[in-house]
Structure formats: structure tokens, C-alpha cells
Length: 255
Image (cartoon, rainbow, N blue to C red; front, side, top):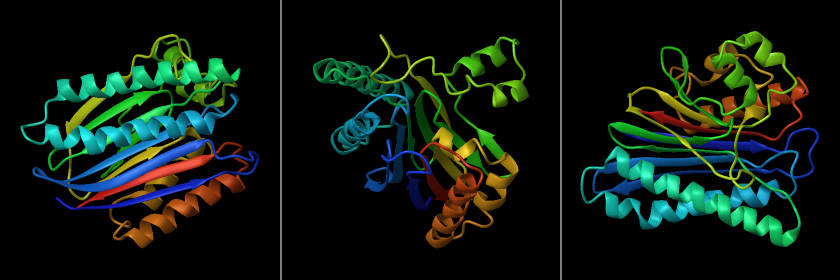
């Protein structure tokens, strides 16, 4: 299986600093080509969110270069990925909290990380940045760790109510601002002729699932140029509709 990738980010209309951080890398391994992508949304209402998001990206990049080559010496096990990635998030939570205490500031970040191998994907999520699979339709893989998502799951709120609730961005946990962090993990089979997408909440609030699918389905994303162009057009559409947050998206097209 082969891949093409794209990563796009925009500071948006309101903020002076882009607190999002993202990284997408295609790597060659003894088990074939793989893609590793991480997207972090530094907390918009907290100070130095860009420091928190960049710190988590660096920690996962260190894992990519130092631990993944070791794991590729044998079949990769879900339990090992779960343990190593959870340890990264827990360590980063403690590190960022300690930094904030020393600096007298509050900071934190979401994180969604994804490893795509020749036959399987591994995804970690903390917060409300999301991972999707786009093939015949738009499928959300991750679950938001937010107040409104919990209320919907409990039957106290409808999806439509959650979409318009002014608490929709209230997180149940994030890296660097929670006493303890419990990431969600998702595992599944990788499909050819599909698009895997990571995005911050700023990318999806003002556009519809149908608009995302129209621009980012695998039938139109045939090369890196189209991936960049169509991702940028959705970012501009968000801004035209007055999205106030930073806007970020990472795309992986499988062949």
C-alpha cells in the first residue's frame, strides 16, 4: 500500500497565535511504508497553548524515531501501542502541568495520533480533535471527550442540541490541564482507496459532513496538489463563515 499526505493549518480570523500543532510523516520500515500523523489543538482559552501542543508533537515524534523501529522487529501488537502511547500522554500531562506551575500559567492541549501500517491503523485520542475515515462515506472513528458528547451518550441531549450548545467546546480532559489523563484508543483495518483525516474542532464547526465529503473523498483526492487545494478551500470556507478558532487538518490518502 502507498500513501500521499497533506497537512494544512491556519491561524484563523481572531487569534494572533496559532496554538495548533501537527505533524505527518511517511516512513519506510522493515514492515513496509507507514504513515504517522499527530494533531494537537492547544487550549484556546488557556495561555501558551502552542507550547503544550508542540511539546506533545515532539514527544510522539521521539517515539516514531526511537520506538517504532524496535517494534517493527516483530508483529506490532495493539497492547504495546496502547501502553507506549498512554505513557507518552501521561508523561506529557505531568510535564506540561509542571511547566505551567513554574511559569504561573495554565496551558493544555488535545491530541489525536494515528499510525497507519500496511494493514492496520492505531489511533489515540484525548479531547475533541477527531479522526475520520473517508471512503464510501464520512465515518468518524474517534469519540469526543466533551461535556456535550457525554450528554448525548447519556440521552440527555440530541446531536442537534449538542451542535448548538454553548458548552460544545468544554472538554472532559486534556493533556496538561487534567489531574489525570485517560486516552481513548481505536484500532482497525486500513482500506485502500480511502482517506484518513485528523482535524481540530476549528476545521469542522462551520462546515457540514457533506461539504467535507465532497472535497475530501478519495475520488477527488488523486494527488498532493488536490489534497492541499481542497483542504485549503474548506479552511477558507470555515473562515468565510466566521470560525473563530485556529483551523487544522491532516490527510492521508491510501492507494
